[in-house]
Length: 239
Image (cartoon, rainbow, N blue to C red; front, side, top):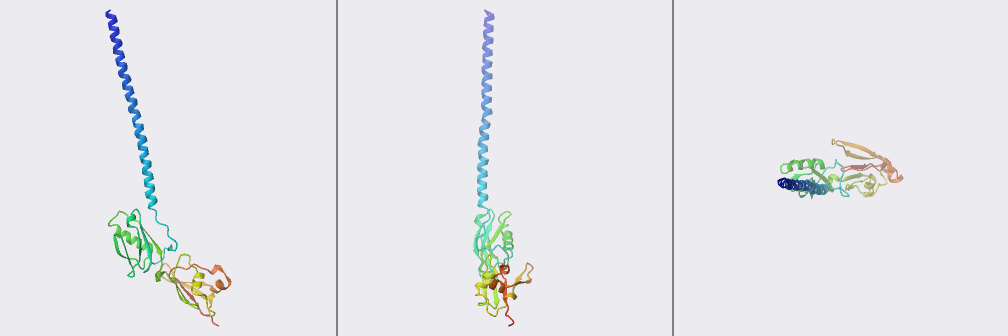
């Protein structure tokens, strides 16, 4: 009888232990599954962040120069020009402003900055110096969107119908300029025409162009591209 009681007690203890172990195993399994859910939740967050960062980066891309804008890095800004100031990662500081008659521009945080006589890159570097007092590592890009100053004009003198200045635009050619001033006169020595242009060091260089061959015979090889500030001289013939 006593042996049976002992056996029964032992069986109860073993059953209790088995149930305890089963409960521990189940709890451990639930805890092991929980982190995987967290991981899934975490994997969603970076994807969202990546999308948001991509959207912000796309919004911060420097603007494409509009039609008629100056892409020549040597172009010198003058009064009346319109410039687009783009400040990387700071859209509230990016504006489009005209160059005032006094030769200055004003933008957010930058007041009365002299723009006349400078190239786009030179003006951008000077604006960066001022902005560095307010924001970290500013990056500025400047585009002359509407060149109308005398610095940008191409002057035509000599034996043409109407000697005058022609506003510069991107892609302007010698033929465009000649047509704009009414063509050559009957006394023009078109094949001895020349373009006076300032090089990067500020010195004048001469470029010979045969306008007679271009206008009368259509030799397009003579249709050279003009640059802001060029002076086209058409001399008079000797006879």
